[in-house]
Every structure is written in C-alpha cells, then in structure tokens.
Length: 115
Length: 115
Image 1 (cartoon, rainbow over the protein chains, first blue to last red):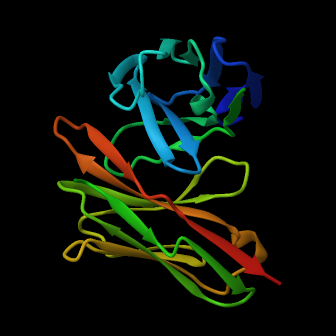
Image 2: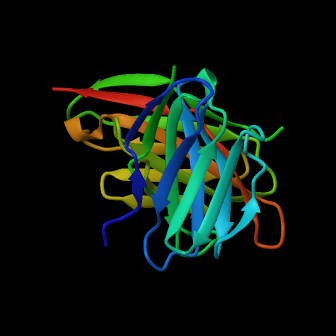
C-alpha cells in the first residue's frame, strides 16, 4: 500500500484566498483524521471521520475551516478565506478502527504558508 | 484541565548513549497513551501504545513505561543512533464514552544524536 497520500505537499497563498488540501487514506481504513502542527501549539486534532461521517469537529478553529469526505478514499480540508495565522503543516491520518489500541498512519503533510 | 507535559523540551546526546524522555499527564478518564516519533519533514510514526493495564512495552531499542497511579510515562532509548534524531510526541487518549476518544497531545521532546 502507498500509505496515506496528501496533496499538495507545499502550498503558498495570499491572505484571503481559498485553500484546499487533499487526502487519500489507506484503503480499508474506516477512520480519517485531520491535524494541524505548529511550533507554538504542537500537533492538534481538527476533525475526524468514521465511515465518511464527521464524528468530532470540535478542534476546527473557526468557521473558515471546513472538511468533507465524499467517499471512503478521499477527503478535503478547506480554508476560506485563509489568514497568515493558518500557516502550519496539515497532516491527514487514517486508521482501521477506533479501538483503544488503534494505530494511526500519518501522511507526509502539507506545508501551508499564507502570506 | 486535561494536559500532557513532556520533558525535556530538547535533548542532545552522543551516539551510543541511552536517554529517557518523560511524559506527565492529568487526563481523566484515561484510555491509552501513545508515543510517536516524528522525523523532520515527515508525519509522526507510532512507536508504542499502552492501555491502563500495561506498564511497559518495547519496540526494538525503544521501551515505554506507564505508571497509571502517578500518571507518568517514559520513553527509554537504548544505544542511540543518529537516526533517532527526531521529535518524540506523547499523546494521551481521554475516553469520553460510546467508544469515542479525545486526544491530548504533548508538545514533544526534540532529540538530537551526535556522532
């Protein structure tokens, strides 16, 4: 398996623009997670899906952030409008099941820079 | 407030030496504790996952311990190698019922192994 795939790997945009990050989870995994990582705040869980349904979006910072999972093999995280403070590395992860010992497999991340 | 604190913030050791990283948490109810290794520019990779009843778990040269009474965990690295240079992140899961979990992240320990 190719692992979790994210695109783009790097994104530079100007404040106010819409940004869409993409993720393809590992085939057969039922759970998908979106994380954000910054030097100041470390790794933060934004939202996670189970069988394409959003379960917990309490980590989504503002209404400017939205995430969708239209099918089992694709998810997007959208920021509209983007702001400089959104600059971070965004990770997508997937796992087979949400038990007490499930292992999450992370993608390589998308480094977002908002100017 | 549920928190996970890691120490030290950063650490430099010589190749071949052992080291121990600390993780203290106040998360309740506790579900499990994970240690991740994150290489620069990559996504985190799971090293160990421990539930309440487990007090030690090994993964090669990595050994994690858990003391659920004192709410402390440690990650011991034996005979360090240059490839151990990375950030190590402690993550504690809070069980919030109905099989749902909330992840509380530490800010990580940055380890540098020198030749």
